[in-house]
Length: 263
Length: 274
Image (cartoon, rainbow over all chains, first blue to last red; front, top):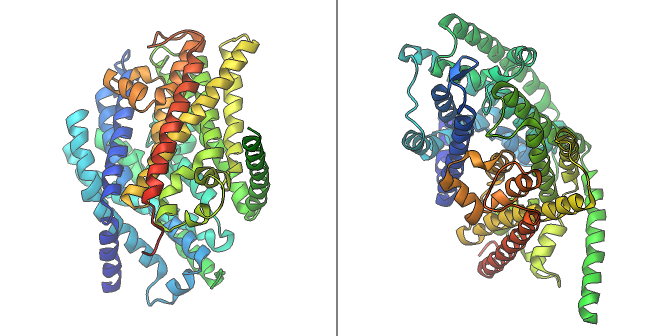
């Protein structure tokens, strides 16, 4: 455990190295958040509520979605790909730690750094320029926190599973992009899936993506009743278990036949 | 005059070779081809589906109907694809700066900026182009546009200008790495912001933001102004048939500024390892 904590600490320091990146990221993410907010404001100009959600909740949704997106940054897939391409995967595997444990610690480290660097500033800017994202029902806070933790794990497992394709395919830039787009559009991070036609929405509810963004966000803005939210969290937990099992299985098989390029 | 012509021929020749090499390198990783072939069209098909769903839920977006939005989206995606083919390297300029990869370009007797973009030409951008063209044609059909030679010329001029604007912005952002000496990978964010400001009418944003997008970071000229002039949707700062040509002019200005900024940055470049 101490070893992993050390990796985590190093990663925090690494992430904080470049000041310009920090400001750049904050500015870029703020612009994205504000443009999204105006997008929804323009759409709601003529209607009060659409799909049972009013404009005010939608703005909260956008702000919290921006904050979550900081939390849901993963580097593991890129990390695996790079270490396979450069051949450093061999030395990574020789270390007396589980390589995925190491990658996980790195991602956690980045997120801790990003929490202070990006999330806090974005929260303040969002509150000042758009609105204060108040939670609809404060009693749902424990549910929200649990669902965020689970969504983080689901997100990380999906990323790691994609990353492991690099062990056989080597170059997975394109696949990382596929994953990114699927996640962005099907998870409700930009457009909640309740705006989608019913059939499409039903299919998406069976996939793990909506449980990464939309479920915690729905709980936050108080969409649906408690029973509906609990049912969602049940499915989220099932997905977490399925992905974790899959991860353990694939990890064993994939690391057995690692190809080292350039040694 | 003759010397200039000879040099131009030389550049054309090199470009041809670069494209040939680019085709060869893309088949290096088969999984990669398959990935791009799925990934890029998927992104735009889904993006377009979202517009459709939003329009179905809300009706119009700021006075733009479905067909007009499809047209706007098509133009945005095509110009994005063209900028991906020629200028995507701008996103990764930071890595070239910190790893000292500009050394190889500085030693060759060709323009550095030219080499930087054309030796890394990104053929995969074609996978963006195809969905863009499909949506564009669909938009034309939905808007019941009469395809005249003038219209075609306007569209082409507009696309050239839009590509130059995008490329110029990538170069400007990438060149900041010379001064900050860090590898900034703003590609994803840049694209997300570009998507938000070129795929939807920017008239839905507050006036201060419209001002920025018109005069400071001229993204509005990529698709919004020329398309609204062509389709006659909105009264904007400028109307009429000449608007696509303004886009081209804006594109050239942005490109010249970006080139100057890049050149000034390159003077500060000191390779890696010092």
